[in-house]
Length: 107
Length: 120
Image 1 (cartoon, rainbow over the protein chains, first blue to last red):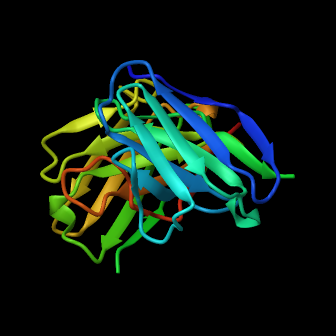
Image 2 (tube, chains in turn blue, brown; image 1 turned 90 degrees about the vertical axis):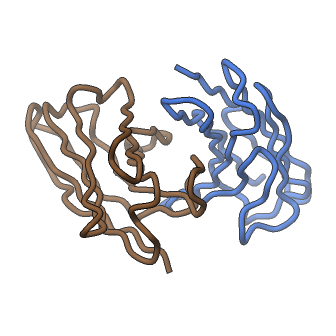
């Protein structure tokens, strides 16, 4: 089974700062990697798919990069509304798997 | 507009059974892989099971294999999850989810979820 790891577990960042979240796969997933944003009490929301394509409704400050086993989600200038847990998910091999998530807090 | 509406959640004792349903609308249901994803209280997302559009291909997480059974009724645009031999660790919100584009494995659309509590 493909194991997804994310780091760090929690991040506390000031508004306006750049944020970099990491997602690693135990085997290559090509570009079959998605990111989701989940705010407290809300349903997860697709943020990035195909490792780097931003989903509808998200601003350009969110970007994804990487391929194979190493992936990065970048928030170029953190806003207060970006406080959430961010999950990566691989859909290259069955079983599809999620990472444990990174919680982004606003300082 | 795509809508996914889960139902069937509730409180059940360990060892018990429950059947979840997901009513879908706003898209060609039979063309899409449908998936159940769960989230235990305060925990992360866990992929549970997926079923192809025809129902011919089915996949399960190891944690539920042999206990859960996914199915679909394309004539009624409904997805199901039969959960048997429930354990305390199955307690979670269960979401049904589907992609926007046929053949992709990420989830553009999610239901609001239904809560399963397994407790004596």
